[in-house]
Length: 181
Image 1 (cartoon, rainbow, N blue to C red):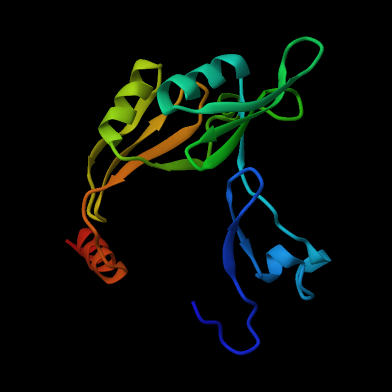
Image 2 (image 1 turned 135 degrees about the vertical axis):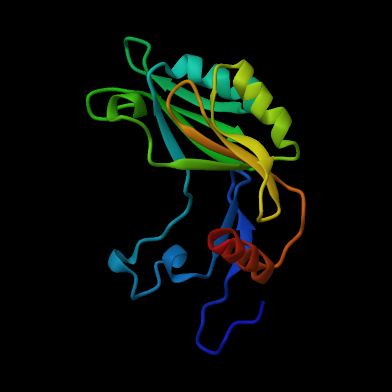
């Protein structure tokens, strides 16, 4: 990629954890002009759950997650556990008074999007593990086969696989057709 004159050099590298990183962008380098000169080094979701140990088992058994680290309080509650799902990381922690789990809030407004080679197989594994269907896996107008499931802890997962390579223009045309037909 060629940058315009005066633009920072934005290149992809990897953190020591193996996760992709972007360098050269002002939000990453702390370049002047970014509020507080903040440098973003990693972004991951922290899933608050009612039973951390059970959630980790669920993510391991249904999504193939690998537990990287776990820290517990004196009573055994999980205060932080890091899991790797493919090239991505998520954290899990037990709910407490400061961090409630989605069911206590009436649900989660956040949807985790998971691209996989076989959406049907992943959805079936999640269902066997106790997930429920929000939207069944089906072929979608934007070239994906996917659906949405709620895991047993109240977190939403959009599971999808690419079945058709489409340009952004083709997706927009199909989206317009869908909403105007």
